[in-house]
Length: 471
Ligand code: ARG
Image 1 (cartoon, rainbow, N blue to C red):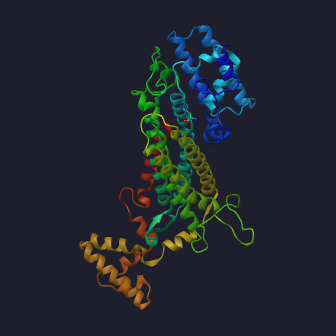
Image 2 (cartoon, helix red, strand yellow):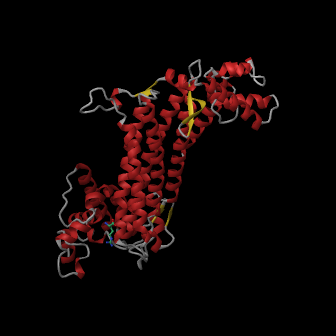
């Protein structure tokens, strides 16, 4: 090893040649990213292996050198996975740490690993590899939650009497809807999230390796080969863009933020549903928490935190966008700020998905309370107006007739059925129709909330879920 190789192996900065003084402690404390980019170690090694194989294939490095570096990278892999890798203070990021160790192990060969490469294309490569793997895991958990919603919906549909509850607009009771319909509504939103994450994965499937610091290389490197070796769909087209592009992180954070918003809305509903005032669902003890002071309390903390975490997920997105907005081409150290929000959003949303799946699959629905609330008299007013439309009355007039009937029932404190039954336009047949249980069976339009079309929706739901599982 030459003196220069040795200094890197001994922990001098990769850029030490130009500098007379070692980096100040404060500089390292402020700029080092090793504490959080450690988790890129496996992807960094994967990237280096492909890079070195490419250097071998193009004749830039000879076979013996390639083998020596590859063996050193294997050893680093082993040390990292067994937890025996020894970090030193000068390891400012995971890429530095690994190159230092490779140089320590392989000497002169190790000092060639960075040929035709910069940490700028190296870090972008490792991060894209990380996203390709970890976002798949998020999608898996997401589809598992969708599956829970679908099986609870199927279960609700499988009892003889339809299970319904009030559907709300403005959080005021509006029309009765099947419980399965309500559960699947959230499922469809989550499936769009999965679709969006898949779209982002397809777009980020581009290898930046070979872009170098910003301008490519004067050595005969082969970015296409590196991309193929790493399983990327294609290599970058513009080296400046390749090292400065963090669109893929922003896009993932945006999709995760929207997913977080959906989870927040589910959370909010469960907080409402499990309140004593609503009493539509009871949480399993394993998925609820108590109070340190109030002995009787049973709280829906998972639902609340699913709601609360959305703020943080949105914050991670806006934080990164703000970091990116003023950056000139190409790489700027600001870009190092991409990792913490990305890792945090992925970690948080993953936990939220798993916790909500457990909470919803183990909860008990108070179907009696739901049906009782769904049976509230005036909820079928629209169905009644539509019944009048069927016998030829213009909808606007039917709306007025039923509205008046509801007002009379309220003002005279008489049951709605009685007022309907005595009304000249309505009568006893109409009075029978206004029970929620019978009104709901009259909903037949595609995608509507009645049992007549619920099997059809269930089929389409399963088809969509299967399509996503195979994407
Ligand atoms: N730790 C840096 C990051 O995450 C790696 C790239 C550093 N490149 C540089 N030229 N300083 O972005």
